[in-house]
Length: 140
Image (cartoon, rainbow, N blue to C red; front, side):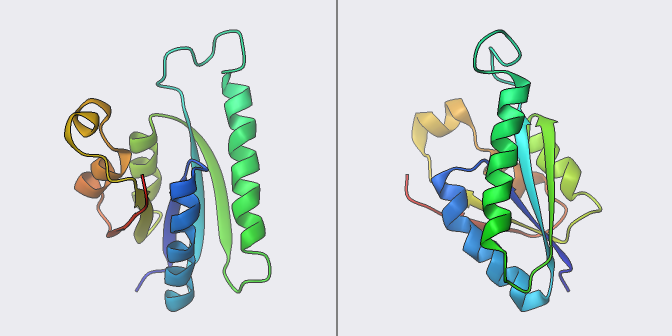
C-alpha cells in the first residue's frame, strides 16, 4: 500500500520526536523512507555575507540527514536522502508528487496570532498534498 514514505526534517526537536513514527510506518509497510531537508532560502539575509549562507545551511542539512541515517543503521529500512533549496512547503510538495505514498511530519501546535503570522509548513502540506499526511503533535 505504501512503498515510499517522505519524512521532511529541519533537524528540530519536533522532527526528531516524529522520526520514530515514520520508521514505524516504514516497518509496517516494508517501505523506503525518503529523508528530505529543505534549505530555506526564503528568509531575509540568506545568501549574504556572514554565517547565513546557502552553503552553511546546506552543510547543516547534510549533518542532520547523516544523524537520521545513523539512527536507521542496523534497521531493516531502506533510506533515500535529499537536500533541496527553496520554500520548505513548495519543495516538500514538489518532492512528494509522484515520488512518495505518504508524508510523516511533526507539528508544534501553534495557535492564535502566532499561527496567523507565521503560518505552518505542516498545515500547508496537509491541505495541498496528494497523498496521506500523518501529523504528530509535539510539545511547543
